[in-house]
Length: 90
Image (cartoon, rainbow, N blue to C red; front, side, top):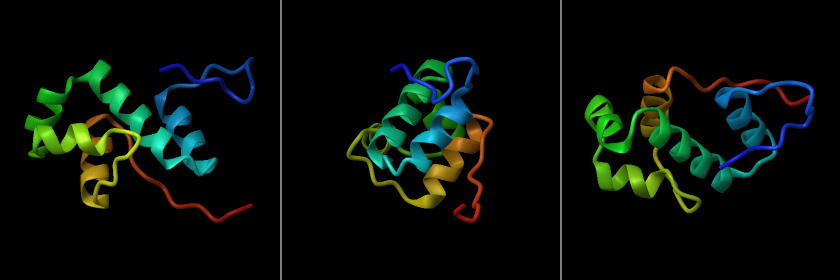
């Protein structure tokens, strides 16, 4: 999966790409992109071992139709070196 940044002159990392999907309100794309990043970075088996989450549940959660618990999302993000952040709307 590739992302088109809002500003092509700026190189975006995975955290910025995921953040832009959340900001746009595209939750399905966010989970799909998070899954793609998890697969290419760690692999689902290692992610499951490290987070103590079920592999099958991870595949389901990290899809466009995923609807994981917040606890699972934070565990996945932490394992990938990221975290959620709450900010006021502009």
